[in-house]
Amino acid sequence: MDTSEFREGLDDLASHYKSIINLLGEDTEREGLQKTPMRVAKAMQVLTRGYSQDPQKVLTDALFKEDYSQMVVVKDIDVFSLCEHHMLPFYGKAHVAYIPNGYITGLSKIARVVDIFSHRLQVQERLTQQIRECIEQTLHPLGVMVVIEAKHMCMQMRGVEKQSSITMTSDFSGAFEQAKTRQEFMNLINSDSHKF
Figure 1: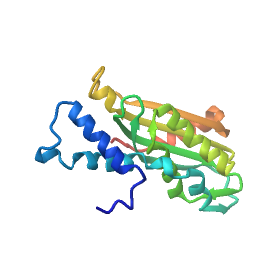
Figure 2 (figure 1 turned 60 degrees about the vertical axis):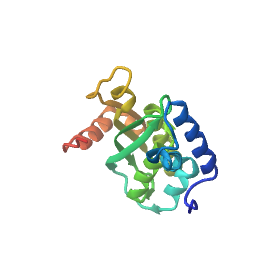
Figure 3 (figure 1 turned 90 degrees about the vertical axis):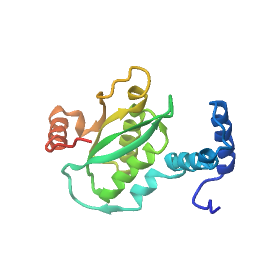
């Protein structure tokens, strides 16, 4: 079995999942479950790959001097994460804007920052803040704003079981502290339908 793309501890993780499946009352020796512990271990390493990635390096690897000082918006970035309370998925869209201050970064790098932070055990509020802080501390822009809208399986599958609810979070700094600038950003991200 080639496990070179996975992190250290994969076999231990699979062993623990085998114990968990048995504790849930299943038989890990039956045909359909024999490979499940390793499959889950691999899936969890993929879903938490953000722990081994550096989001600031992603931004600085594509840093360009540019005298552009208007809003740069990357919207409808797919977000898939695991809630740290129940380890159930939450998913949705992130919208990120920054106003450059002499430097810009590759547009795809903004999406990569979202991906790195979302591939960790998370709460949506912290995820929103971490994305904003990373862009702010790395690019030193005139302002940053992040909005995330997501559906949480911990609300849909268990607990209150509300399938239609969407959670929205935002965080902003600098020029986005002005209501007019925030409104411009909100108008831009709401300009098209972005249902998911």
